[in-house]
Amino acid sequence: MLTKVFSAALQGVDAVQIEIEVNTGAGDPKIIVVGLPDTAVKESKDRVTTAIANSAFMWPRQRTTINLAPADIKKEGPSFDLPIAIGMIAAARREDVPRLERCVVVGELALTGEIRPVKGALPIALEARSQGKKAVVLPAANAPEAAIVEGVDVYGVTNLRQAYEFLTRQADLVPVPGNAAERLSAGLSSDVDFSEVKGQFQVKRAIEIAVSGGHNILMMGNNNPQTFQVN
Image 1 (cartoon, rainbow, N blue to C red):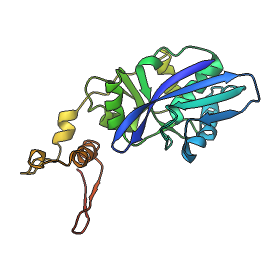
Image 2 (image 1 turned 45 degrees about the vertical axis):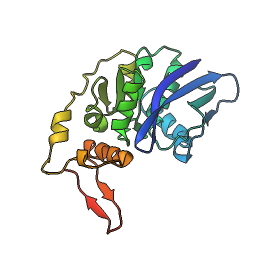
Image 3 (image 1 turned 30 degrees about the vertical axis):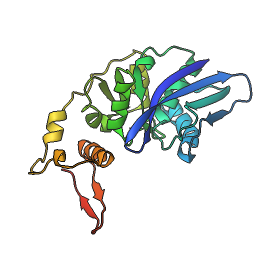
Image 4 (image 1 turned 90 degrees about the vertical axis):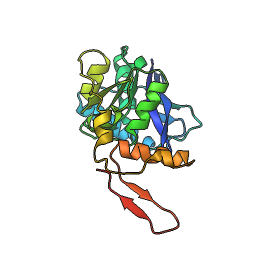
């Protein structure tokens, strides 16, 4: 059985859509991850299978191939844990997951099945909207940041079972309300504006994303590096 889950990978300050294909078939009962994964992604099969078992699910006891497409983009970090787990559970149960086609799914799994936050929630939500997706399912801790993006519903989940039951329509979740004005206006007390900066598009975009997500910024130039705390 073939199951497809949509996710996203960071490339600098942007994100790109990744299709995670989980296919089961005859052969040795082993899990193979292909599609230019780094070490953290290769190790995901151990985290994922343990998290699936501790969430009272089963994973396929057949030869399972997990393909991260497109294959020419390097996949880094543990954010593919959750979508891989969703695909493996669906393949083992041989059931359709109705909400997968319209959702982008990201999240790191703890061995208990709890979902840990990931990096890049804002660009991931922007990429999901640009690809015509209707929703993003991601760790609850990342949901307020992603909810800044208008035009896409953001659902925060805390564990693997909650995520799977939502995606299979066994349970419903309330989208996290957007609070862009509140988050972007918090702590504003400056007389300067980015409109006064000519050029430097990538630098300005990186700073905008960092500020939107409430992250720190390290700026380096000809003088001493300056570190800023975003409040």
